[in-house]
Length: 355
Image (cartoon, rainbow, N blue to C red; front, top):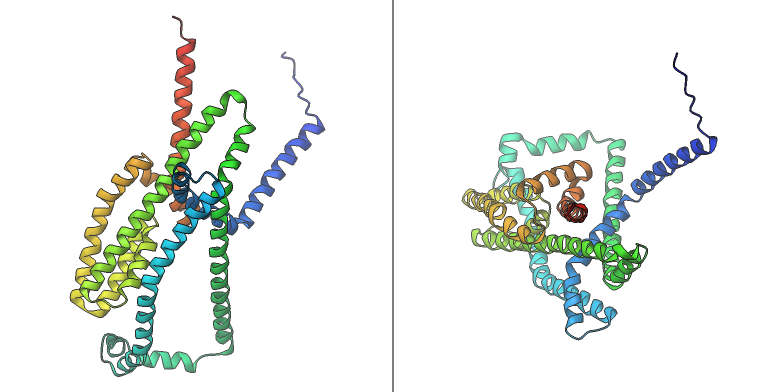
C-alpha cells in the first residue's frame, strides 16, 4: 500500500497569496477608476513621442539644454496649430453663422414641405409628429432633457480640462522623458542596460513613427476632403474636412464613419454633389488603405497588413476607439521585444554549441 503524502501549507503562505490576489484586484480597480486620466496620459505620451524628434533635432543643432529645446519645439508645434486655427476658424465661424442665419428659412421650408428638407414633411409629416410630441410632453421628460443638458455641459467642461491637462503632460514628458528613462535603466543590472536601452530606442522609433504617420495620413485625408467638398460646392467644407481628419485617426472604422456623415450632408445639398463626394471617399479609402498605409507603416512600425488588422480588431474589442488607436504601436512594441528575445536566445545557443 502506497504511503500517503501530506502537504502542509503554512498560514503565512496562504496569507501572502491572499494578499497578492487582493492587491492585484485593488490595482485593477484603481486602473478602472483612473481610466480617464490614464487615457489623457496615453494621448500625451503619443504626442510627446511625435514631437520628440523635433526636440532632439534642435539639441543636435546647438540648443544644448533640454528644457530650452523642449520649449522651442513644443512652442513651434503650438504656433503651427494656432496658425492653422487662425486660417480655418474664421472660415468655420462664417460657415456656422451662415447656417444660423439660414436656419429660420430651413424651418419655414420644412413646415411648408419645400426645399432640401421638405420631403420630411411631405412624406413623414414631421411637423405634426413634433407638435404631438410637444403636446404630450410631461415633467419627467423635461427633467430628462435638463439632465441631458447638464451632461452635455459637464462633457464640455471635461473636454476643456482634458485638453489643458494633455498639453501640460505633453510638455513635461518632453522635458523629463529622457531623465525618467535613465532612472529606469539605472535600476537594471549593469550588464543588461545597453540591451534594454537598444530595445527602448526601437520601441521609441516604432511608436513615434506610428504617431507621426497617423497624423500625416489624417492631414492628407482632411485636406483632400476639404478641396473636393469646396469644388463640389458643399457648404461647411472646411468644418467637414476637419471632421474627416479627426475621424481618420481611428483605424478601420473612422474613415467609414466620415464617409457616411459627409456624404449624407452632401446629398442633402444636391444629389450630384452627394454622388461625387461618395465616389471620392470610396476611391480615397482604397488609395489610403493600399498606398498610404503600407508606405507609411512599413517604414515605421514594420508590421504586416494581417498583423495590423488583427491588432486593431483585438484592441478595439478590449478598449474601444482608444484600444484601436493604441493597438498598432503596442503590437509594434511586442514585435521589438520578441525580436530581441529571439536574437538573445540564438546568441546563447551559438555560444553554447560545441566547436
